[in-house]
Image (cartoon, rainbow, N blue to C red):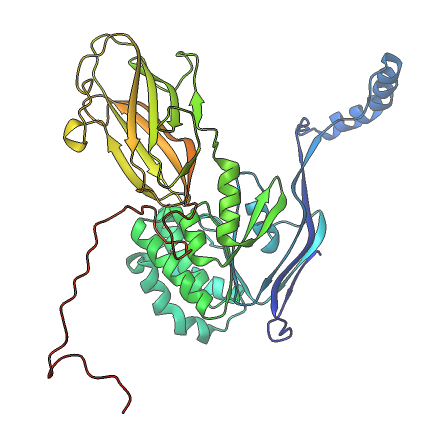
Length: 456
């Protein structure tokens, strides 16, 4: 057995999780043998030697070739007790495989992992639940699996039910629960039954927005109580707010292990194309429909050069080119900027009443042909960050969608020290120049004014 879970009382080490050269190999491809009767199996056994001989005579290999992949390869790291660590990476990077090994759902091919403490996990909707049992019975079942006494579970029971919000259905078999109800109860059980180590995969997105906020708040509370949390998520805002340290997985290997903002920046740099432009040359395969298709999205400097790195003072020109394929059709064009954590920074549409200038082609019948629309983002507006550009085209109603590309390209804004005289990184996604004024109001009155602070 390559996964070892030690009692917290027996091991008071500062290390909660230790992973050493962990690897997991899967075999893919290869035909699956159908079920055979005993007679067919005996016949196959007699014929097999003759088939192998015939293959050799024909110069063919008799071996069945099955391709193998390494979902994880030589992964090593340590997590200290009370630490909240994020795990990020693209789909297929090995994040969920790692958590499944740590929770002993699957065994590693190579390496080892040690878990010092009781482990609670939330990997998939309904994991650890018995579908024929009620919500109440599953709470007691999960507590028993964690090694808790009945008195401990009863002490937390009302708090668990209240947090989950499924009190009306607590005596209903969980097979009748919706996916959202599953997540609510599963997270509430995992967080409230006091495991020393909590492993959470990307499942909170199933719950509604209000419950997600409750979960994030609870995870922050859990971390402050000194318990260890390992969080897998694609929500960079959550990772940044909760995790002091993060791991970046790429192709089953640890690409970076360090401070969360640095790891997120490296991850986003690998995800977003910062070439400053994306072009579809063929209108038949470009995003869109029979009315309109997208041709290109570019970020240009004020001099008209394609650019993906801007000084904070520079104007940024976003060019969107599209083919109009239906004579006389009308449309509006919109752009949306998101910061490196996925937060929407601004949305702009070429509707005249929304803008400083009038776009003469808005709500005007388009002839067939290629069009280009330009949006200018003024300098000294955006903060020093990396931003992604999403573009959209629709008819008179937003539901009448032509094309929508959420993250077409990205660009970076940098402060080269020209504005920030105090040499500090200011928070926020926008940092406009605003009007400030300070006025001298004179000496304070003798009474009721500012007390004299001069030492006597």
